[in-house]
Every structure is written in C-alpha cells, then in structure tokens.
Amino acid sequence: MALIAVTKESRAGETRVAATPETVKKLIAAGFAVTVEAGAGLAASYQDADYEAAGASLAKTAKAAVEKADILFKVRAPADAEIAALKSGAIVVAMLNPYQEKAALEALAAKGASAFAMEFVPRITRAQVMDVLSSQANLAGYRAVIEAAEAFGKAMPMMMTAAGTVAAAKVFIMGVGVAGLQAIATARRLGAVVTATDVRPATKEQVESLGAKFLAVEDEEFKNAQTAGGYAKEMSAEYQAKQAALVSSHIAKQDIVITTALIPGRPAPKLVSAEQVASMRPGSILVDLAIEQGGNVVGAKLGEVVVTANGAKILGVPNLPGRIAVDASALYARNLFAFAGLFLNKEGAFAPDFEDEILKAALVTQGGAIVHPSLKA
Image (cartoon, rainbow, N blue to C red; front, side, top):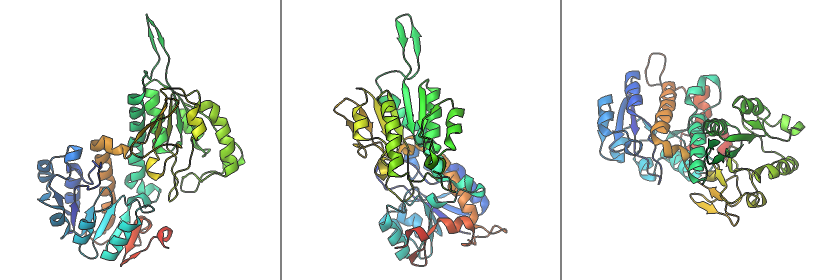
C-alpha cells in the first residue's frame, strides 16, 4: 500500500494545504495510506482531528511524515529539509513553479525523486479534473474583484436614493482566461459596468455572454493569437502598440482595472504603461494578478500597495487563492486526488505508468535528472 504524506506549507503567506479530510477519506478508499503533519491544515481551517477521523495518521514533524512516504503532496515546492528527508525514488506532486524555481527542481533531481509539476498537466478532456491552474485561477479572479472593491472608496453598483444617484463603478478586465472570466462575472454580480479585452478571438463571445463589452484591435494577428493548447501567444510590438492606443483612452475612464495575462515560461507581458496609470483618476484601483511573474502593470510591486502621484492605487497582492484558503485547498486537493488515481493500475495496485500522457506531460524530474523537454538546458 503506497503511503502519501501531506505536510504543512513552509512558504511565508501560503495558507493552503494539499489534502483535506474529504480527499484523505477518498485516497484511503482508493487504496492509499495517508500521513498528515500535525497542523498542516490549520491555516485553511482544517483540524487535525478531522484528518484523523478521515483515516489519516498524524506525524509530529514534516520529516516524520515524509521519510517513509512513497508520494509527497504539496501546494508549493517542498522545503530543503523535506527534500532531504525523501527516500530515493519517491514521487512529489505540487505546483512547482518550474520555470522560476529551478533550484528546487535541481534538488529534487539530485535526490532521485520523480517530481510532477501540476502546472504542466495537459489541457485535455481527461485531465480537466486535475487542472490546478483553472481551479486556482477561478478563485483568484473572484478574489481580485473583492480586493479591488475593498480598496475602492466608492460603491460598485448603481444606487438610487432620495439624496441622489450613485453611479456604477466601471471595471476593465485585461486578459480573459479563467481568472478574467470569473473577475467579469464577480464584478457584474456586484453591479459594475464591465468591459474586457484579450488577444484571443474566442474570448469575445465568452465576455459578451457574461454581460460585459469586449474591446480589442481585431486584425489578422488578433485572429491567430491563440495556441492549440488554449494559451495566449505573445503579441508583436506593432499589435501591442495598436492595442495600447485603443485601450489608453478607455483606461483613463475606468474606476478599476484588473490584469490577468500570463504566458507560460515567460515574464508577464506589460499591459498597462506608466502613462496609462498616470491617466487614471484619483482613487482608481489597479489589481495585478500577474505580479508573481513580474506583473502586467508598470510600477506594480510584489506584496505592496503602490499609491501613484495621481492618487491611483496599484495592488500587487500575491497568492490570491491563498486568501480563500478553505475553498482553494478543497479544489486543489480534489485536483491532486484525481491525479493520484493515475498512479494505480486497473487492479488498484500502486504501479505508475510513466508513459501515460498526463503523467508524461507533468513529469519534470526522474532518475536524477530534470527530464521535461521545456526545462532542459
């Protein structure tokens, strides 16, 4: 029986946990044994007693949880001490941030671990239930609007009172992936007037179906600006200049701008220039969801609220899903439970098939080396 270990996240500000009592119960029913480090779920309001009631054993330390484990579930990359405690050949499953955290991959490879980056799970029908990027981005888009509403000094919906009318807030969403779509839906539910833009043509219909208005330069480059995997391509400098010209006047009229554009393996594209930020009214808000990959907004700073000379605020809030830790953990844990099923054969025995298309796509280290094609030097 394969043993799965779940440990407390060591990274500052990380409140999520990689398994919940619900998924522990399901993992055990599937044929795994589970050990949880004491206190692993407390930041997400999951109690040790609930893990025990679900069938997990508790370990007093991360080392005690990890050293006998066949599989380690994490939210982020394991800490050095956890990697050191792994037995050779152990499996690690986490959001490893593989393009930016090469040192962790090198340490996992040196330990002989088979590490899977959940970010690399392919976007195919069979893997939808394992798609951590979507599950976490969905919550990030929601939370971005809540953060903006909290920082905004006005109401979001239009309100008519005897003393006069309060105008609805104008919200502009830049980048309409999973996070952007949820941001649109949330801002609309709060009563804002919402517009959105994206370089991918397919998003126009999605934006309009949510009751928002779509804004983009719709030329030939725009019509071919989406990869087969559904990601945005980086646009040419010429297109970016045309798009900037279109949106500049629009941004100047907005109360809230939320940027969500990410390109796998590349720094986040700059969508909002210093001049565009300067054109915004005092009290307006910009929320940069891409801040952990360098940010979409010029002047944004990781973990800071920047108040500009014109009185706008740029929110560089990291790890927005971690601010909804209960739900973010629940969704992420279900993603990992589904992924763990790939380690079992048809008879339910622990026998990972590393040629399975999903496992193969997500595998980043094995046999003492970094093996993912996009990560090789």
